[in-house]
Amino acid sequence: MEGSLLKDPPLAEAAEKLADAYSSLIKRIDDPRNHGLFRGSMEEAIAASQSAAMLRPSGVPWNHAANVDNSCANLTEIKSDLIEALSDVNKADPIAFFRVNKVLEPSISYCLSFKDVQSETISLVKLIKPLHGTRLEGLGLETGERTYWSLASVQIASPRHRPFFQDRKIRPTLYPFLSSKVVTFAERIKQIPINSQELRGQLDPMKNAIDMEIRASSAQFGRGAPALSIIYGQLKKKL
Image 1 (tube, rainbow, N blue to C red):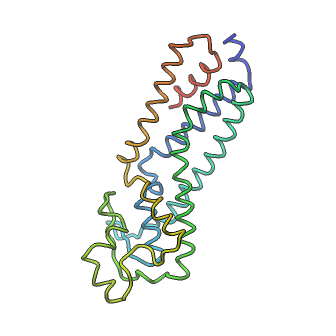
Image 2: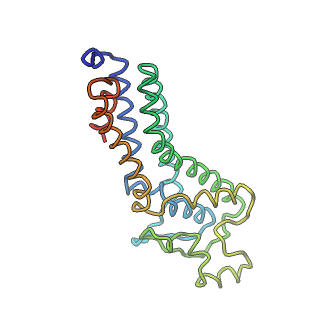
Image 3: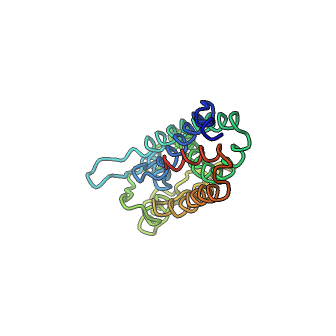
């Protein structure tokens, strides 16, 4: 039975496609060079849209909006691949799909939640820039190590920048206005990790749960669930 399934193009191809798409998602999220994932880059994109100065140690300015936008585009593409792959698995074996989708869904939802906040960040940048493009002109923000204290919102609210805002008679906040959309966004962005350590702290338990499911499935069903064996075998190989 298992040998015939391995030769079955719909299931074998769907399993490989799913493993490729899922591993691409995890590797993309788990890549510390993917700066556009982190809360700091999103906040800095908003600060930069108001002309705040944020320089690298070399003196070259960061393009945080581009980092966020590019990361969002990559996740959008991976999401499309995942939807197609899961659909193919469902067509090939609905029972196996139900179990696989149940174990992958938490990590997929978590990873794709970044895309939603990234998209909102870009929309907010486009809204703010024409109206408040010079609001923070002349304000220098430190960049470098990703910590809570390096966040643009925290730096802006710090006492050392109080004279800047007092001189201009504006509120010391990252956001130039507080519409219901901005308030909702400000709460959502707080859920985004600040650095790779925070991200892995949230993602690793989900990855461990998948590994445990693969091991448990192998021990529980052995050769009695060939479809799951094929799908989990591909996932194990690619992750």
